[in-house]
Length: 208
Image 1 (cartoon, rainbow, N blue to C red):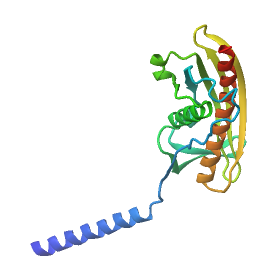
Image 2: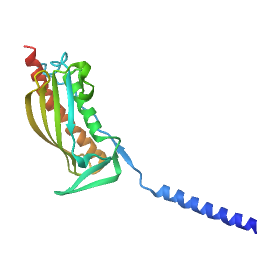
Image 3: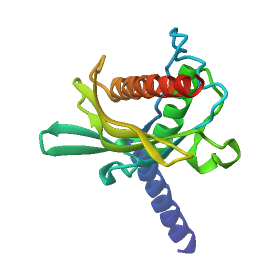
């Protein structure tokens, strides 16, 4: 009788294990994504290299609450969004955005002195770039949209050097999330170029 009970319990355990494995096998895969830095040094000599001896800090960046999560947000209507459980950012999107922007601007200006504002103390930045991101999402098989207010502030005087709004739309090259993330990276690249042009002109002006 004891042996029969042991065999019955073993059979139940084996059956439960098979159900668990089958469930794992049928679970959808979660894909993770990051933005890519894709900006080349500008050929305009009056801009590229003009900030080489002047440090620039980037931040703070104000971030929408709806993006403060790992799930990738897409638009499915004017007032409706989807937050996908199985397509996620590979970390904090805000941090990824900041790193990508800094890397792009650094490359465009050909300067190693473009830094995050949190670590800018030893560099004594001349200018600070502050950003207020209003929208950063998109539609599958549609556009990635980046809408951001940004300003450049002279650190020494705390005076506003310039302020503007950039609204950028980049078409996706396909219907999937990889295409949307690639278009999002291109939007950050264009924003980086707009910021780098203004910084380059300001840096060149201070050297005269």
